[in-house]
Amino acid sequence: MEKVGEYRLIWFQHLHKAAGTLIVNMAKANNEVLYDPNNNGNPSDEKGSTMPLWKYDKSRLLDFINDCEDKGVTFVASEFGAPDFKMLAGDSRIKLITCFRDPVKRLVSNYNYDYYSGYTEDDNLESFLKEINLFTSDNYYVRIFSRMDGFPDKKLTEEDYINAMNNISKFDILINAERENIEEILVKELNWKKFKVDKHGTFGDKWKMIAMIKRFQIKKLIKYVRKEKLDSNTINMEKKYKLDYKFMKNLFD
Image 1 (cartoon, rainbow, N blue to C red):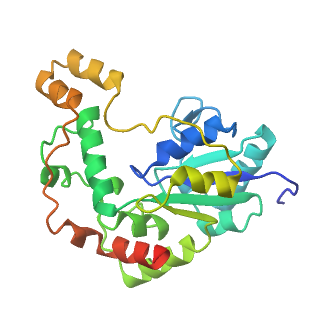
Image 2 (cartoon, rainbow, N blue to C red):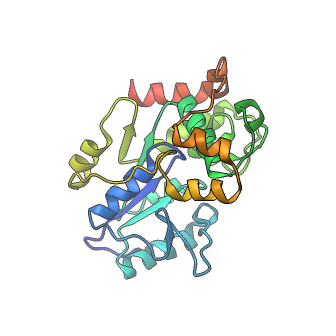
Image 3 (tube, rainbow, N blue to C red):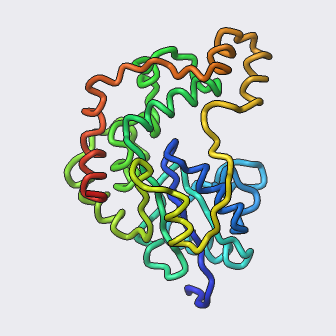
């Protein structure tokens, strides 16, 4: 049975490389209580593994929300999959938020971040895209909000697009990072204060530099220090995100 009261849980659907860490760090700066332990706002178990909230059925997801209330948790991020949005929206305690950026820019940012972080050694975007996973899948936004995130190589249909539109309509706050000031929206909508926080960008991370030195990746280190973004051939790349661009146009135009 759902608990009642003044409790509020901000549920942030973190779209990978779309200003998510900025929002998580703003939550921390505004004294929102994150699940302990967590990985950049994503609840983790005692072993440090991210809890697969996107795989939880309604009963287990409700148990998790009740557990958050009991622990005083006020902010949860979900980055690695799509939870049951309908169930979350039906719980009066939940405030659903998410943030978008241009789909191709997000992909290029994802590629540069993975390359300099050591998650991939591919030195061009085309090779990187052969690594099939959720974050490199086509129409990533529609895939998430249609809850087809478990099938990164499946071609999406019009029905998937409709499901995505139905799910995103349940959100309380939608932000377009290309057009809007993220901090100002969160200050207005969540009554937060504006703080200067770490955006966790690709460059400027001393731990990345140390890792490159340990691996004797001197050329990569020099590029990193110079903040050289890898040249990426994005010609015709918009076709890969045709549904995502349509999705954002319907949401923000």
